Length: 292
Image (tube, one colour):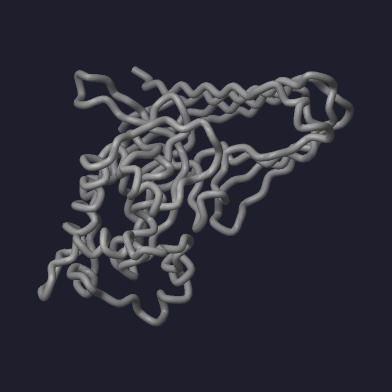
């Protein structure tokens, strides 16, 4: 078991007093058999007049903050501690019918996973389809676990990581063309490639802990929010793959939100009444530490 603490601070500055609209925050981690929330705190300045909590369609915990008056700054600080347990079998116990690709979801499964098979981006030149097809053995059977593992490592080894400050996700065809991207770009690429093969996949937003050089190679994506992908396999459920770091499962990943579309997993969204020039900038800092 590993105990990890996260401090995520987002700060905005404004040139003149502005009125804040409602802000949506997805910063509280998900509970599960391998991840247990120990404690959490959310500190917002200026203090909201109301914070309303809810669960969205994916069972993510969402906070909605309402403000009154005007301000020249906004800071949102999330602090929490989780217990992370590493799965002894990160590949899961896959149902025999899904151990070999191609496989079919059962009629009772299909309504629940079908939206996670639908493609999000166009593939005008067919580049993504061709890239995904290379992981399937031509004219023979392919082990599903090997297919997904190979795809994960292919992104890790064949693409250059870059930290991008601009919002949003690159279309997968652009990531293929550039051969580089951020963790969210790589997650979107693998998610869309799995969907191109008819496999249900979804986007995951959270954090990654870098245990340091003594425990292996440094983890990419630290110091900010991180993104990876979950794939649904019958018998095993939703399995985690981090193509940025070549990880399958792992206790160093801290899940906060899962979504069918990357934009649905944004950690913080909101607006203000004023002009575009009023915003002077945004600063984000993330610290993930292990409790000794």
